[in-house]
Amino acid sequence: MSNRILVVDDEPPIRRFLRVALEAEGYLVHEAASAREGIAIAARENPAAMILDLGLPDADGVSVLKAVREWSPMPVLVLSVRSDEAGKIAALDAGAQDYVTKPFSTGELLARLRVLLRDHAREAAPSTIALGALVIDRADHRATLSGEDLQLTRKEFDLLWLLASHQGRLVTQDMILKAIWGPAHTHDTQYLRVYIRQLRTKLRDDAADPHWIFTEPGVGYRLAHG
Image (cartoon, rainbow, N blue to C red; front, side, top):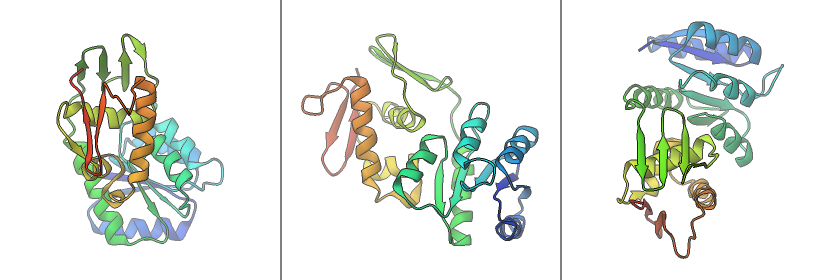
């Protein structure tokens, strides 16, 4: 795997600081100070991962995420001063794997980056899971129910795929949060409740009498066999 990391941030001191920290860990660093430059370097250099600021001078960082996700599955770690929940959810929905708020700990950021790179490297080849009328295609990032596209967001799809990968077995809240939102979000159960509710709506599933997603209160969730 490539050891090139792309840092997209409009603050020169932050870029210099990250370059020193990353190069000390053996990474090769590319820098971009704008959304346009970041997208261009991502396309040209195909880095192993991106560290992305949301507050860029020419466009919001979420637009960079959306553009890059049209062709690249590389891990993206958002590094931003924005700490509001809506901003985090927007970035995660757009395709970020993790979110770190400035000011930040260098050690923690590097640890999270290692986790993202390790998880990305060992991802299984694209495959399809079929559970009766529910078909989940990882290659196309698409799920259908009785042939109808469920129109899932990236995080909704990732959640459904994780549950389907453990079909019939309980998946704990802690495991889901670590896998989808990152190890720093194991207490953010509100994320999980929101996305489970959204998934149930799209699956036309009734929480009181479920066919697909079953809840073990306070523990986790289980996806039926179909």
